[in-house]
Length: 467
Image 1 (cartoon, rainbow, N blue to C red):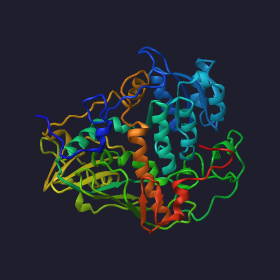
Image 2: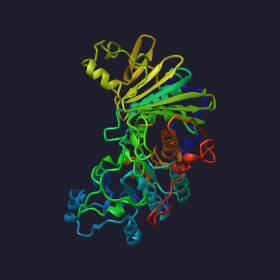
Image 3: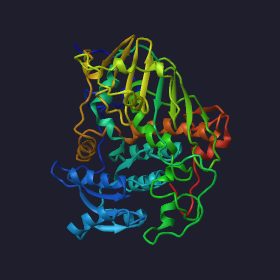
Image 4: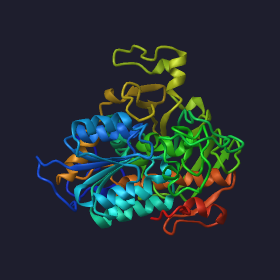
């Protein structure tokens, strides 16, 4: 017996031409036949960019160009494709690549540092290219809003790189929550073990010689001019305001995924942060952020808490180690240390009939995800209540199928990734204000009582870059 929804969800506007809760359709600007090959260019091809380009290749795309400001960091991937196809072109500047190869590129992957996501993605979409962009979708709230508008206007296929969004644990948990299994939800807790890079530093690192293989000016892109310094690349840029979005931006597109989708956590009215203090150069070493959401179509008003840097919710909210058992009654958490790790990252949704716990960085931990009701903890796979949820053919497969005329990826920019990113990045307004409660006018993107954080909402672009 299938369950019925207990309240009308904002996600209903996504239900265009499918019977599942999250599917929608576009008419892409260019539709390919089922056996056609899509010409893809990679923007940022070292690190995560390498796996993103390989993901496109695995799903039948033809890689036609690769772009990275550090050709040494992307060397393995570049060598792999250029040695097998001497027609694959290599660039350092994505603007030059898109200009010169406009007619040869159908889609791009964007896997740069956060501050370049929007300039690269928006330029590509404005030229009619389908776009896969890593999380967080953008550096700022304004950029996220613009990405949703441009993607919708241009009719291109889009997807953000929050891969677990395609996984069954998240989708089933969302529909169970939406079916009322935990009743009315009044609070949600989302946590991460990040940062795993330095934050809360007192000053910018000392100037150093620029490596010969790196184009530092292109790496800075739209950020303010600064001398190259050791300790920024290749990974620690995440802790600096000019380039990254801190622990919140890095991980919330994963760990907030299930509560956001299940509870329609759009447009909070206020947000406030308690931090370890910071100097407006780097994100703080730790923080707790409180988001207030109004009632929405039958879903009560609720409070969401974000924790990073070692901050944690009250442990009494979680199932005890001894309660997490398989269907045969055997405890499946090895020891106290393993149990503590379960509480390091993930999400917890608290209702008046119980709580839903989804541990792990990506919400894919089906082994430990479950329902806490009274003293009983039931793993998600053992919950008998039936719900309908859309099975995914795979994250990248959703993208490839959509470009060829199929349903849009669920984590597309206009209906999902853009609004999710807006909610997340509002937390960084509060982090910057450090203790001041920010009142938020979502329609106009205005922090009504805090003009001092307007530049975090809408950033200034430098060095000739614009959006």
